[in-house]
Length: 170
Image 1 (cartoon, helix red, strand yellow):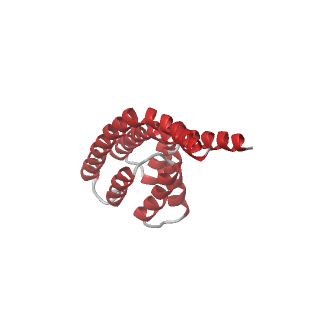
Image 2 (image 1 turned 60 degrees about the vertical axis):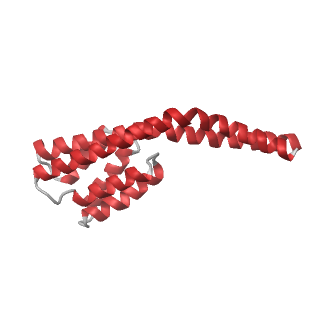
Image 3 (image 1 turned 180 degrees about the horizontal axis):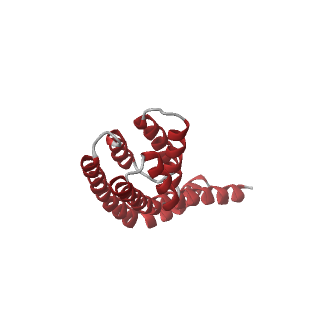
């Protein structure tokens, strides 16, 4: 019975290590997807001049999860009620932060962008989009560095921590 518990404990810590590694690997992908979404947003605002609600629906169809569900929820919320865009943006951004591998830095960058969204003319909005993309580029470099440095280590540490604790207890 003791060995079954030890194996379960080692398996659990190993799964925790693999989960941390998965998040480290997903973060750069999701940052790239958000950058792509912002580039689509820029193109739709400048060239097709669609309302933001329609732009959000277009982005949701072109970008993979979990970013697409974020823009889809923005579209739905704006169509159901005419609340403040920033309030809707922050509400759904908090949900995105909980369901994605984004770090707090990306959340703050996107919250700041949400404050400016729909508040300026086309040129100013384009500048804010470019600024946000630049900030996300910086975070993407950081995410890649963390992925390279810590992904394999998280997997190994999950297993090794489980083994160490089991050996201490036996």
